[in-house]
Image 1: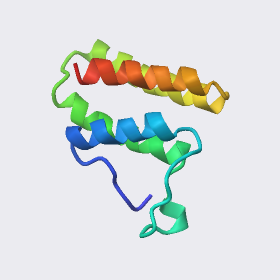
Image 2: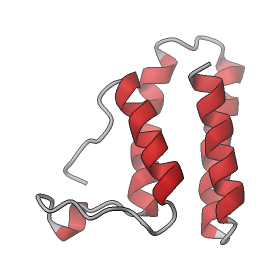
Image 3: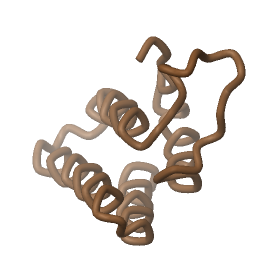
Length: 100
């Protein structure tokens, strides 16, 4: 991917909301991006994982970071298995923990 959607914690918050609403396959096509850079489920989760670096700046407890990463991993797994509501709920759980 040649485009970074998440450049800080505020971007992560906004991007997370977009993923919750659009995943797994309803991402809005952005006219200025080439087809290979358009968001899909896999690219969205790569970007969410990229955003974890901003969380690590404020969350110092390694166990809490592992929990947050596990929520992202479980959400992606749920989406891949066709459990879209479960995936969205896991992302909402992630959101609640990060943006208390």
